[in-house]
Image (spheres, rainbow, N blue to C red):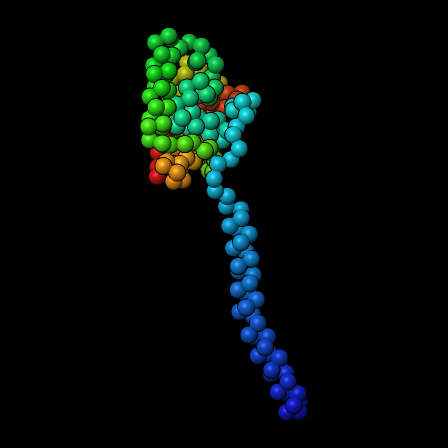
Length: 194
């Protein structure tokens, strides 16, 4: 190979080597932009009334919202109708009183609720585990449903979005729900985290 061809070839290789880091950097930024676009934060659209009990995520979102806002009538939609029907007048008046206290507290603290989203949902795969059987027994005791009717239990992480004194904030909660036939109902709110 002649000296001239050798110099030309090496100059092309050197230019190519200089472009590789730049190309890698551009591809890396592009991938990060795509991934960050998929990581949506903020509330989802409200759950329509006919979809409240359709999935564990929907019933968990509605329940978390009802607890945060003090909307006990919305909360009742997260329970089996048989459970709500057997409530005594005293129970209903306690819920109404609780609701009033929550709403007054939100107003006093200048808190405005914006919505919810459900990120992580896990179902219990081992129906013979002690944890599953204990949860089913708790559901049977609390709501008066037959343990044979409970076909699945789910834990869903829900984020509540709100503002306080015009500062955006969020709170995460975990809600345990269970399925009877094709309907999902809330068992309990398991934990709160910042």
